[in-house]
Length: 118
Image 1 (cartoon, rainbow, N blue to C red):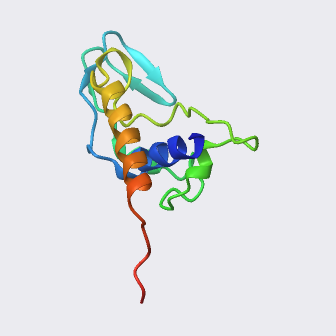
Image 2 (cartoon, helix red, strand yellow):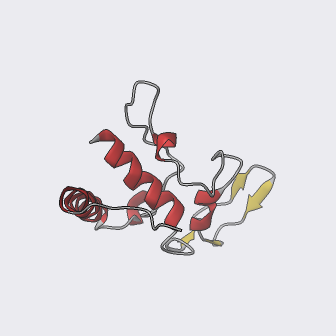
């Protein structure tokens, strides 16, 4: 079951369902690296950054193993935010994750999947 969870995490990482997350506004002046973000600035989370090569090795390859330790335990990576982050994250995240898991396991239990013959 752990590998199935890793497959779902990788599918969520690679799919980028939305281009950007919910807009946020800076409540105070802030500094982010070399940038100064003035109070009142609107900020958007670029969901496509889930493909960022500086964090993910081979970001365009489907590799569920990136979410598994050597002992095959699940890694919860803070860079994976397909449902947003913070107080305004998707309210249906728990339901969506449960449904994805049930859908995938039901599909695998009831059908034989094969690659097409070339």
